[in-house]
Image 1 (cartoon, rainbow, N blue to C red):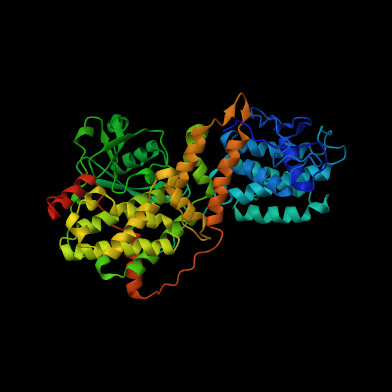
Image 2: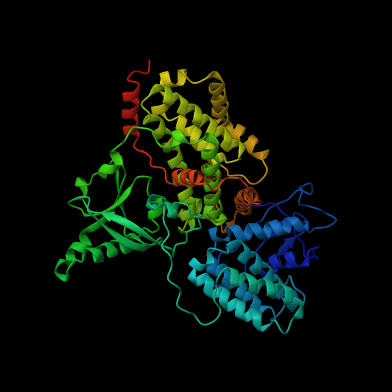
Length: 570
């Protein structure tokens, strides 16, 4: 991939004055007409990075027009969206907003090479255009960025002072006021925030009323209850911010345990460890944040000393199984599939589009909260293990074959619902090695369902970069729940396939490709999901079951169950 994005710009007027001048005013413009050497240059404020793309463009390039050197309006709007979505990869958000603030202040100052003298109003409109686009994109997560929020408040107050001077800005200012209220950025005297309701994570669903609630997006400032275990499996329950650091969690644990001052040295010796049901242990570093949503399905947090680290073992209840009929045997496949789709749509809607960028690129630009995306990935893994768990806990061969048939039906209905996340997860669960080795069980599956499952396997085949799946997806219309891990794979490929910065220049083509992937996510969610489901007691029971799966995620234990059911795979 080239380190530049080919495009054509000139000093002339654009058909869309506001969009063009928004980009030029704040990001700058200089042109070399002969070879279309392009520079999109941000004025340096403090240590801000220059945003530049320099290339030689063929006159036959779709963005090049010798008769009109300015690209179409839609392309300019896309470019602005690219910058808003990806600016954080080369420039912190608060610095980006400081530039907007700077340009608004300078709008009445001396003219620049790209601006004629006296163009005060267009320059202010340019800043407003970018700010409005920024707020539209970032609403819902700005509350978590205190420094960015402060700059926006200052810029908002500055703009409001101009409201009476420039009546032409009335529409933009009204929209700005509405957006500022929407993102809950207070511009009056600060008041004490109301007491927040503690939100449940998946593993905290214990009451039916909790799991039946519509899921809402998690933010770093949200508070949750969490159990932290000791080596003897006793525990303390702490109330913590979702974004709390490991050190903060250990401090809360210490306070709960009521260590005396004389025992203060023991606090320093405490470490936080994530222990999986398989017995695998990972020591978490004190500076790590947002650890709650990164835990495995049946992983737990343990606080211990370095001396007791080796003695940590998984909780007993995580390795106990109770074979027998579960809820899935009593519920129709269609009901389960529809509740899966409804729940996963809620989770998908909770993910802010920028979480996808932050998840992949956090190593380059500092980790930011991606809790909702991580919970979606956790859920995907949970569904896979749920399929294997239910089949392997079913001891009777006839019932097990019937259950296998039901899961194939569930996958088919999820695909029909355009819930490709559930579809993929169920198919992957059926392909779990502990399940696929059950020869007697698969032999008794009717031929019709065997053929259907083979088609599903072909659809999920990763060959040729998931070509079959991508072709099916392009034929679907919103609403769609995509297989989220593949989106992250694509973004990772874009990230690792080319550099973001090269010789001080920003790789505009790379940023555009990233932004295009984000816009695809927008498209999937551009229409609401409409599923007709009853609200009868039995349906509520099914809903509760689907939203709080109890699963075995220890592959060794799954194999043990498998070999008990069918000792030989011959």
